Length: 322
Image (cartoon, helix red, strand yellow):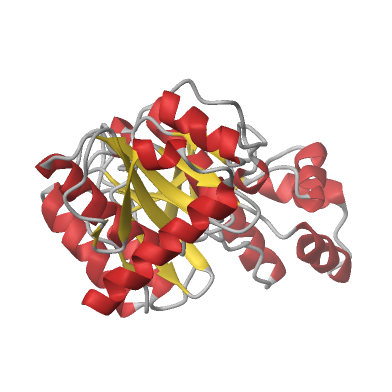
């Protein structure tokens, strides 16, 4: 299976699940390959045949973008360095959940969440500690007796009941058979986090500093909070109290037009606006839904309200022309 085939399979799964999927990000470097939305669920998907090809810098940008735009970063692949990814298993790479195409299909189309997480040393299952404790007491089994039956310590059983330790698949199956109760907690890919590092994706802080780039600094002066990117198809995300803008900076060129078109597709999915600040003259005022603005026009604006009015004006004019 090639990466191209895998991407087509992912698009097919997401569309079957009711997602609107952006155009493929085929501009390098790229922190994600696809953006997809279904109602309030927003995904930023990175596709790698070998999930160990994800580096820390790319993962960090994916997490920050997802946090900033209210989405989830997901890695979809086929193998690790030494084996194929298993079905119904979640692998974590730099605090991003990684799954294979079958697990993606089961989760979004069949509504069947995975139960198993991969970690150093093997595959593990999270136990519902309250259910375990209630079932153990119902059978009048002491911690010591249950520990002896499983060949583990009393402290291990206590940790299972407290929810502080995952168990191997064999242990969970033995417990479920012994107590005649389902104990495995399912994994919510959209809200999972790496228990081994205790870093929850949703609580990641988003950096906010004055950007070094001259044009982005101008946006900051106009009243926007600007978050620069290094690998996304856009240069930054700019936000004021009303709007969030995918922001590009470039000279007018065929490469810029291609990037603006991609930004337009992503902005439709992320429910943001898309704007390109051009160093020099523009030959058109829009590319699809991306508004083009000359730097000299930006110089004349007094605040974010005026920029918003200019963007809205050009968007409306483009809609009328088409």
